Image (cartoon, rainbow over the protein chains, first blue to last red):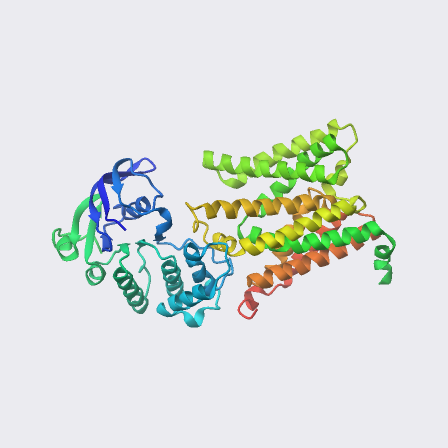
Length: 227
Length: 278
């Protein structure tokens, strides 16, 4: 996949300017943290990359097609009253690879079990989603995400309300995905986590405050609002 | 006890109605279950009502032909679904209000059609169903619809369940449209096949009530669908017996039985306690 280049991009949410004149590059295969206060336009940035919002001005070059993007929303958009097993939930993530209307073959089943093993949920494969804790549900969402084999991964505050162990497992997965040369953009609230996990950081407050290698980016601005 | 079943051995039309409604109950169970999980129960109701003007138009054009009435009903209900969806998208209104608005218009047109037919169409039969009306053709229609439902569902099941769980999962891909359209077409086909026995006003009863009742007992999807089918089939049988013994229209009698199963389930169902064990 290509570098994703923002050229003077502004985005409106309803009638309010949410992002203003954003210019910069997410290099191919990079892992970038996006930090900023509430209302800084972090989610708007992800929505725009995912094609859910269109820039009101400016251009985005090199963004992959919608089918190559996986977007993990901050609040799981799941109706947990729908009874479905963890195994089925994760296996269906592979639909782009094996087709949405086909039965799950042995290969998909194998990769599903691998994904479940990686997030530590193999013993929970026959549970239904509503029987999982919020941390386990987040692990299942991560497992489903990687089954989609995306080129671009968008994560909106994936560690909110997660305990340390879950955070460390999931952060380990994100680091691993980067070695598979996927481009990853993750909205965070925690500077330390950004330092530990992400080589690049974009500080955002409707416009770019700083954007580059994490240490430089965080040091360039004495910004105390960010948690 | 044997007296209750005697009419079935005596009257061919009753046996036809029993087979027809059993087949439809089995076909409607998985659809109803998913309709409820997709929070579309009332949308299903709206589409059922929308069958009326189409069935009347079919009758006025081609006489008492089940195929003409079914085709008319199908076209009318699909048109209502399409219009309501487009209006909801264009006006950013809630879908249930656009469905309510459009189905009321369709229903009014249907009733005016019946009135304009000068008594040739029996409104009560159309609205509430009539076991006497079920002939071989009606049975064939039910069989075709039920077979198609199970075949298509076998193909559609996984993405449909996933799109129910994660409504935006397939957004931006053709799969989202395929899943939505195929499901709507299946629901409408079943409503159309059901209107002879159940009536357009009551057809949605076998779709929603057994599934809603089953929801009170289990949370496993496969168990839910099987239980809904079982409740639907039992309601069809007891409803037809009630209909013939008490001389009631078949649609409301079947719906009343399914409704009793629902109310009993609401009171006695142990879903909250049992859901981890089933």
